[in-house]
Image (cartoon, rainbow, N blue to C red; front, side):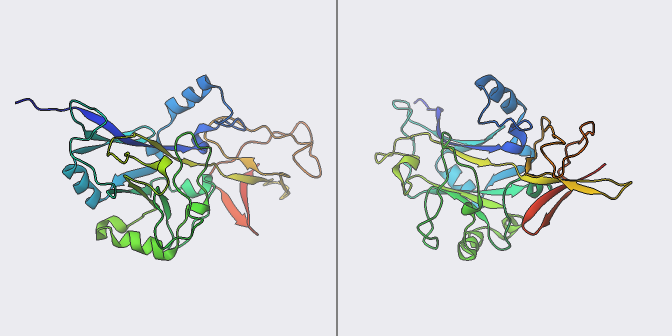
Length: 280
């Protein structure tokens, strides 16, 4: 008797963040393929988030001979496949099988550099199936080639949030930023994980955060004079944003003055606008 130990890719989830991938005012989306590769090589989602299968999902992974494998940009789920057809799972996967993963934020500054509004008692949901408690405007999880960034449209209602949290064990409910919930058959065929015949499609889903843009407020300690930029500027881990004393301020400032970029530590919100404060 021979034993098949072949595993195939069931699906992949890629996490990206423009705070780490953009460089100053150069966006990751606008970079050359070579420059994108350089930024990805330095990127690791583990620096700001943690993703864990729920206790219930861990049981399902074991029962269906699946393996959860973290990567630098997210994770992959593999499944044992038949020797004669590596797109055919060894154990038939029900179309309504749901796998849930908890997304927690590890970096206390995440809210500072991420272009989102955080709402009490509401979590973010990334799913290929709309919960019955959500409206028709529900935003489905994008796939890797979709040019979609995470926004507050992915926040779900308090009712949906409570429903998903109730499915977690007590110890899992602490510090949940969001839930990634994927079913084998989606509401939209393009987001299916398996075909009608149960064969693997191996999709790559994407959760892509945008970096926050703030007004930069420069505070002179000696003169107590404060000036701010006319427009918002991007916060990025890499690169440098040049400030033009003539064009970026009203009234314009002296041309020979140097204006450093801010840290993500000092951010305030005033009348709906975000400000980065820099003491000079």
